[in-house]
Each structure stands twice: as C-alpha cells, then as structure tokens.
Image (cartoon, rainbow, N blue to C red):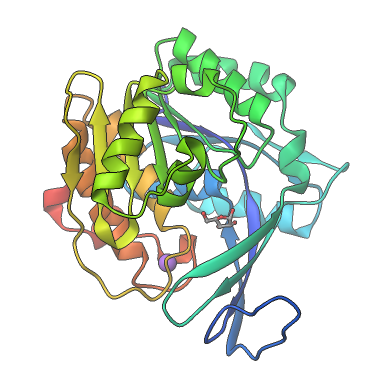
Length: 309
Ligand code: RIB
Ligand code: NA
C-alpha cells in the first residue's frame, strides 16, 4: 500500500539542558533539568505526520550503537515504517546538544555523524516507496546532495515535495528551489537565503516573493509567535496566517511539528488551500511549544480538536 508521507532526513539524539538563560562564550552556568529525547529535524517531521494519522516511512541512517537501536524502536513505537532505516558501523548516531532558556528559546549544536552517510545507494533502495508516496519531505541535516537527489526523484515521479532548508546554508544549490513544491523555512533561514532581515510579516512577504522567484511552487515562512506567511505562484499577494497565541514552554522542534503537520494535510487533503493547511499546522505546532522536549511534546490526533481534521 502506498505511503502518505516519506521523509528522507536526519535522526539525532537530543541532549537537552534547561537553564535560566543561554550561556555566553567561556561561561559556565547552572541549569535545572537534563533529559535525553528523540530528535533530528527529519525524524521529528515524520513522527508528527505519523501521530496525526499519516502512513509514513523514514529513509535515514543511524549508527550501530545504543542510540541507533533505541531510535529504530522509537520509529516502531510511533508506527513509522523502518525498512529504509539503515545502521552503519562507520559513524555514530547523530547527536544534538540543546540548551533551552526560561523563555522557551534554544541554541543547538548538531553532530550529524551517521546522517552524513545516507547517499544514493539508500535512495535507490527506497525508490519504489518514494515513487508511490503522496508527499516527500527533506531538510539539510544530511548531505545536501542526498536531499537534492531525493527531491528530484520525487518530482520526476509526480510526488509532491516539501523542502525545509534547515539548518540553512548560504550557498544553497539553486536547483533546490526548482524541485520544491512547497519551500518552507523560518525567519532566520529566510534571512540567510535572501540576505536581508526577516523579522516581521512585511519583511517575510518580501523574502517570500524573492524565494518564489527562484523557482519553487509556493513558499511558507514561519515567524514563531507571529504566525506565518504563505506565497503562491498563482497569486501575486502573500497571505499572512495569524498565530493562535500560546504560552511557550519549549519551542524546540516546533518548526518540525509544523512541517510534519503540513505534510499530513498535503497527503490527506490534497485540494485544501495552502493557507488553510498552514493555519491548521500552526495549531498543531502551537500545542508542541506548550510542553518540554521535541517529539515528547508532539500531539497525537486524539489530543487535537476535531475541527483540524
Ligand atoms: O528542529 C529541532 C531539532 O533540531 C532537534 O530535535 C535537534 O535534534 C536538531 O536537529
Ligand atoms: Na516542545
């Protein structure tokens, strides 16, 4: 049976410390809580789509180590297909050191490890599944060439693509725009890609128009507590999708929750307008910021209002 959503992307073990604020260079500060969780932008997005009811598979690489074994079990526990989850002895499972301050903001260092070993061989193995999926999602925590190749394969087979250029790189291959049906990034990623500030709705409109010109089908720029902006080729004006205000406990992975939800809506309601999908995805992600951690905070279908489905 065909998949709704296939994610070609990263898995990381999140090592999270909660502290009153982010430390400065050379400084040691006391935090109050430490925990380990399942993260990585690719896996986060896949898990969120699965929790909303999408039939999902993950194409990724973990290490042949304790963290990798655990991660595979996590996919199984969430109903994600693991046929294309590889384990390599050449590198360790990816890890993310995360510090969260009292405002729920974070700073993250990732060591991608085994994620960087995902390549064309694994994509070829997954090709039958990729070519029959409804939506494919990629990010930039694996080799950019692998992401680009996956997006190309999807596009060639008429599979809808979502590309999340995160973490952003200044020298992004221009082909990424042409293979993205939906190009979805946050304000800081948009800023880096267009080279001008993106701090409010107006600037996001400008940046969105610029990114759209580079060849993508549609652009979504998420603005945290300011909601998001949707720009489409068919329409000359951008739409601002306002947020649903929430008290932020931990915003880590909220963008991934948004993208996972967006992938779910694109697969399940292909005729829904993109603004409406973004509006609903905002509400799903809004739930995730109200609890600590990344995947631990992602809502299941049953936790959400029936109006979202
Ligand atoms: O987007 C949030 C994610 O970024 C975290 O889970 C961490 O693993 C990093 O990849
Ligand atoms: Na959270």
